[in-house]
Amino acid sequence: MHDEYGQIPGGAVADDLRLHGQIIGDAYVPNGVRLVLRGQVAGTLTIETGGSADIHGMVTGDLINYGTVSIAGSVIGALRDESGGARVEPGASIGRG
Image 1 (cartoon, rainbow, N blue to C red):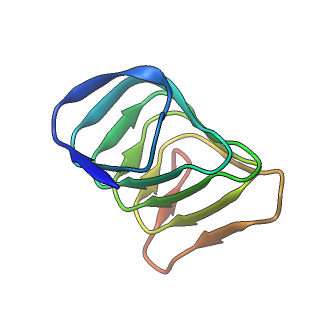
Image 2: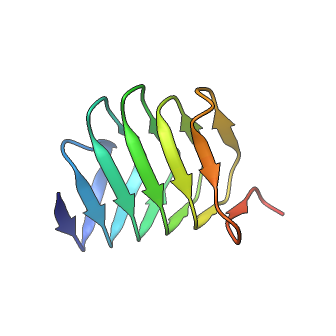
């Protein structure tokens, strides 16, 4: 897993990533890849089947989960848990209010 502190464009997260910066635009986590989000996704984040994510930062759009995800941060949009593999930690924020 590598750390990223800057801004990166949306699209596929190519390999295991600990993001302290920002993804600009919609992003997805493919099969076999893990994202640890401590920064922000400025768009919708999709976790594909076999992908995983730990959300400690913020997703400004929707979070669509077909894999596994743990949410301890904020999702401004909706959570669509298609796989049933989402865990929302105490103190996490989902939705616009």
